[in-house]
Amino acid sequence: MSQKNYHLWRPHPWHGLEAGKNAPDVVQAYIEITPFDLIKYEVDKNTGYLKVDRPQRTSSLPPTLYGFIPRTYCGTRVSNLAPDATHGDGDPLDICVISERPINKSEILLHARVVGGLQMVDNGEADDKIIAVLDNDEVWANCRDLEDLPTMLVNRLVHYFTTYKLVPGQEVHVHIAKQYGREEAHKVIEASMVDYQDMFGHLMLHTTNG
Image 1 (cartoon, rainbow, N blue to C red):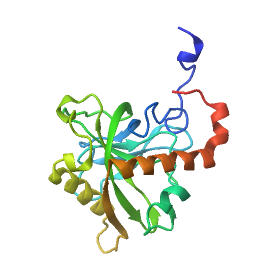
Image 2 (tube, rainbow, N blue to C red; image 1 turned 30 degrees about the horizontal axis):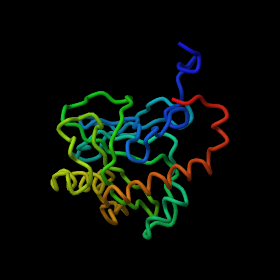
Image 3 (tube, rainbow, N blue to C red; image 1 turned 45 degrees about the vertical axis):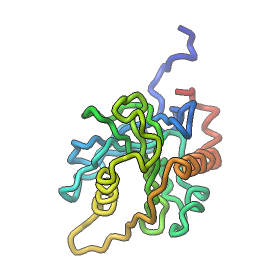
């Protein structure tokens, strides 16, 4: 095995891995949360380790695997695709991955075929949620666009993201501006990859491809 094929240390999930050789059609996803998690986990941006963000605030749990696409960033180009947003949320691009078989482990990598997305705006920030299916999942083998998914499953995602920040007595400024299919999802991913290059391209000299 040549030295370039393995790491002497663990790469940062956001900066040290690739978005995927076939992105934006098939992307690599780093999973932070499973549909079984009562706690919201997220990657610590400084260390790359998974940390506890907060307990889920409502009885609504994420209906799919949830994480992000490495080497993406929601900046100016992503926000330009969302008329209701004034800027990007400054995080990697989120992704929801559908799998027929239950996957109950987080902090894993998988390949996901992109089928659409939700244009979510959170307090004026573009916070898109890409929707994808596990790439080698035969049950979803014929799913190529958002319209191929059951409407109820998409509705569950919409409900989760419009309620997961609810706090009794407080108003939440989160809304889904629209749902979109594969073609627009590809544009959002491509925009986030360019936003990443603008923000973090200098780091590429100090990381090893994943």
